Image 1 (cartoon, rainbow, N blue to C red):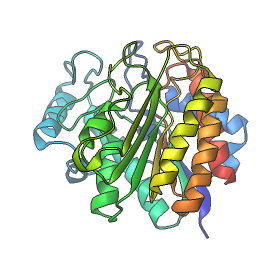
Image 2 (cartoon, rainbow, N blue to C red):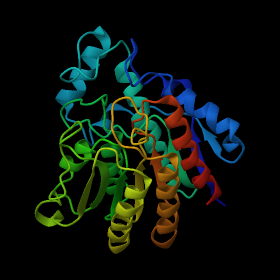
Image 3 (cartoon, helix red, strand yellow):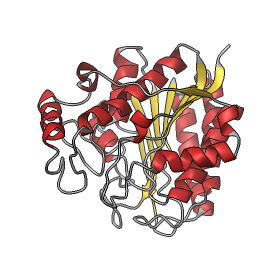
Length: 315
């Protein structure tokens, strides 16, 4: 019988991060795991080790030219992989491969019924594009997972749900015309926050028109605002009956994050996780894979991700 939840912890995964005071530092996983242990989550989950993805798997989403560039700058450790947010460092290619590989290992475990739910704290790098890095994100593990779910496992209704303060533009635009992806994103209004995208009018193109739901939230939005918006998101997901749910649960939407302006509490993350598990139980044998995403106040991310894990481990 499947265990309830697999959680991935290991130095190889924690290593994805940037030093010199960068908001996305390599200490983020440790901050979460200390809180999770204090809450007793470690005794309720199946701990799994990180896994590295081979290049050919990463190229399910990313272009070979871009992968070449990451390898080159990983060797030199010089420059930026985007316009100034994502610095290269020696070994960044290997670290980014671990993020992708760990997410795909979780996908495989869920689809083999080894566990019903999964959580990967250092993952959900939703800004990376097929041909470039962006916003602290080198490889888009979400995008590789979506391509893998479709190509390797034959799923046709994959749900991607994102409550990070930043719009998941790297996922949205890569699959804007793809009817296999049901996309739901509650994020701070792009008029006030990077990357400036995700307007409510962006609902998909061509065969995917109407399969994408962007819900911009006003700066200073609270739990009450989130709960109201969540009703729309949940009804949208219910109509489309997903076969697998990817849940990007970035904690930078919680009050006190240093680079965003939303004012949720960890209760918003707990609510979203609870409702997604209930929806998954109806439509896709419980398959919810949560990805940590953003979050730059260490206490906030620790509390939010622990709340998500508490839900996943109890369901």
